[in-house]
Length: 173
Image 1 (cartoon, rainbow, N blue to C red):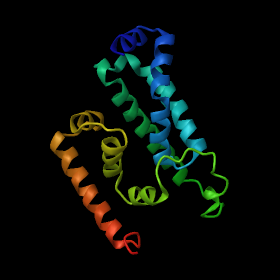
Image 2: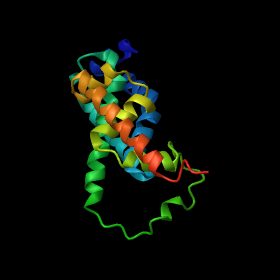
Image 3: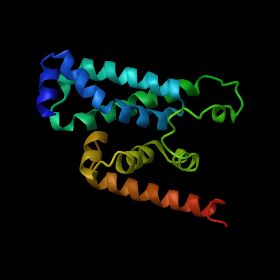
């Protein structure tokens, strides 16, 4: 993979395409968690392809290609979320659940709701750690934060999730 990244950095379009296609599904799933709909998630994937292609020569460590892509994905997804907050949606609250049998929904609705209650930094760290299996070291590099901060934010987020879960009707039988 490192050889492929280096080829892509030298301008080899086919090498970049091959690399990007390896992680396209991961990018889509990460984007979907943030933007919560198929169309916006696909837009994020397209934007990530463009941004990563344009800036691949800025990647200093080829072994962190996937980590670098996930960082770009989170930034693009946050931009879409910010942009969408300015738009007034006229559809009903439950319309998104109608006809979703063929859609790829990466997380259960309950887990999705719990994660949505987290702060942006907490959400990013939880998703990177448990959804993409990144190490704390990789997370600290992606988010450009100290290792100890990554750990403390994760533990704070997990504590919030536990409290939310216990307060909800989920545990009641």
